[in-house]
Image (cartoon, rainbow, N blue to C red; front, side, top):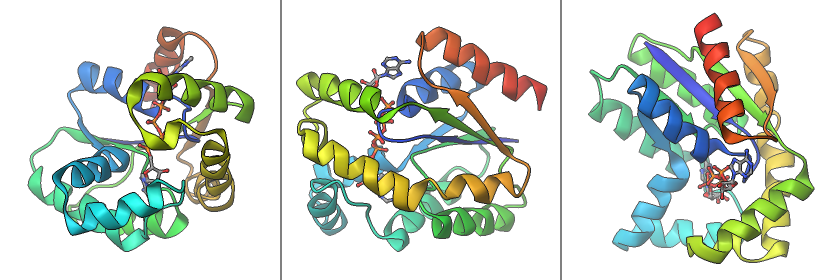
Length: 190
Ligand code: B4P
């Protein structure tokens, strides 16, 4: 079973590369950002609470996203594997994911981190904001807040996987196809 964590700051290309990996390997895509936006669109209590935080560029509480992932793992017990996109975003989420996967008798195969400088992230997200309709992509201060949240709360997750010998960092700047080819070669190597 192939279980990948695709990691990186907001706008690093996680969603973009996930779509290509799903096509190639037939994995189930678990994007906590997408799951939260679906809750918002459905007008659930969870979605309304999450929206208040997401609109400020702040992370949603760990228990909320861990609960969503738990549900999805239970719904997809016969999957060939999963791509975790935008999750885990804190060390507590990483530890919870390990526990959940252990309950299913599996574990994370590899964590691949896309490395992109802050300036490039801001440009990409502002560009996406012109068409995405995402409120968190349309304001430079908000993007800065998201990157700050990443630096403070999410970046330490790399040590969690490095300590397990599962961390690989790659340059996330360049042609989308070239970055994809690098990810595929890491997967095939492992
Ligand atoms: P997410 O939806 O995960 O948003 P994101 O970090 O912006 O990543 P995304 O995958 O969408 O962008 P991508 O890099 O592919 O999270 C949104 C919010 O939800 C968070 O701020 C938080 O509040 C909340 N949340 C989500 N998960 C959470 C969790 N686990 N815990 C707590 N809170 C959580 O792409 C960006 C752009 O770059 C695209 O337009 C793309 O076309 C472009 N791009 C990609 N690759 C490129 C390349 N190589 N060159 C040029 N452009 C490229």
